[in-house]
Length: 325
Image (tube, rainbow, N blue to C red; front, side):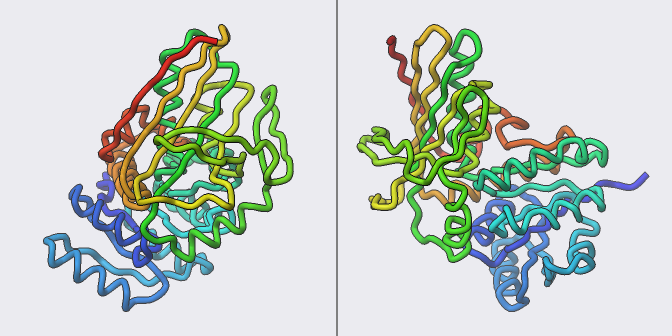
């Protein structure tokens, strides 16, 4: 009988998110194999981790080369990918994980990428592999609010709305590219259980949360799918900040509103610190739990690990408000 590996392959380890995730994995005592395109930055990160008492292996990998990817994955227990745009780049990594029988976690927040992974549930179960997507501030921080509010709602909700405003110290080139490639998806929402596509900017509105009135618009983010799955509601909207929005500080906020069949609306807010650091902690905690053993299948982070995941992973304040129509 072979012993399951406890080592995590961290793809994109030398990037902004990757470095923070590597530190979070080390803090949780999770052995990590740092992977990326260039050895120099990986070696630098490995030395920094070793100085803190967390030795890490290094592997140069070409994600466009199936053989290189398979070799890097071999002998690991979980692959954690930070490399986007996920709608374009996640598929081959997932293929390699399924072929190797290795579980997979990513920090995707693009609706197409998350939907594509969830559509592989049958394959994941057939290979006895756990696939988890959206293991970051977006969409996990709105998902945790929806899961909590649904517990307080009698019956299946009629409508769910969510919104997020992540404060970040620095936006990486990878994140900018992911956003640019996602925007052509337009304003996507669920109405009467059907996916509706409209031009970006349709349905713009003002939402007040985090003590601020914010100009928001429906966007092609994974929060939409996570909220629909968490609630079962036929009408779901996920808002993103409008293009003219200016971030103030690095605190991050999310908001959710769940309207029950009786017309009663409940809202909740979450507040935490810098968004990329929150993503790193959530991703590391999800990976640690998957490594310890999780149900095969394709999941969002909240679907698999429940409403308590985010507040277990990060220092977050959650408040709930109820009102009647």
